[in-house]
Amino acid sequence: MRWDNLRKDAGEAATLPGFDIGPVTRTFDAPEAVGIRFHEIEARSAINEVGGMSHVDFRYTINPYRGCTHACSYCFARPTHRYLDLNAREDFEREIVVKVNLPEVLRAELRRPSWKRELIALGTNTDPYQWVEGRYRITRGIWEELLAARNPCSVLTKSPLLLRDLDLFRELDARAGFAAALSIPTLDERAWRATEPATPNPRKRIEAVAALSAAGIRTGVLIAPLMPGINDSPAQVSEILERCGEAGATSVTGIALHLRGEVREIFLDWLRQHRPDLLPRYE
Image 1 (spheres, rainbow, N blue to C red):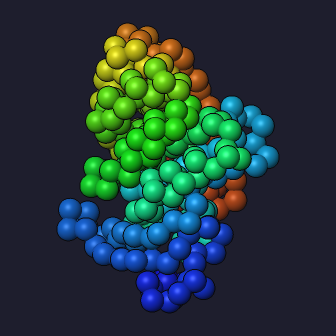
Image 2: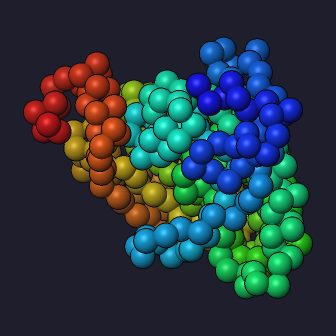
């Protein structure tokens, strides 16, 4: 595995294929997360340009972490772990790359004369508020740098942990422009626990929408993905719409499930285990 060559003393050649990041500086198991390993790396760049995605309203993203402990069965980002010679299944959930120096790298990039302060989005690949952010506070450091540069930004997350940074969101909104969105595919407890087993309770996410809205932060909700037979019944969707309206969400957007390549195989395997009755609809 390429990780074996990524030691701090391995020099400039020890980089992760597919990503402009430096050598692994530390790998360790977290006692509070049995079975999960964290690989701390020194990033060489922070801002990523999104290519060929005209359907989104941003061109630039930042990803403080690679891999995601949320373990969502449908996650489209799973195949990105292949660049690290890790698999898109358990490794994506249990081998987490942490870019420990990202705020400092971002600071330098935001100061470049060529940077035009375009919108930067967080949460487009893996969740910037997965639970380990409570330890590292890298995402908070990113907001601090974006605030200092008065750079517009946005975030998408499944975690109410973002409320920790509400003070920065207020300042960002006033000085640069800021928007938040919570991903809430379902409020059905059975569907939630089956499809995204390590995510915060979706009703807590609704509470986060209410808190952000009360603070004057534009906050939308994504009902994504909508999965036939799992979370797309009229009753399920109506409940989310009602709760989002009560919470003051500025928008609610539904996005259908898209299954491609390896993610399709992973999701079909999940169906075989959890909902074999639905296999004919998906195959």
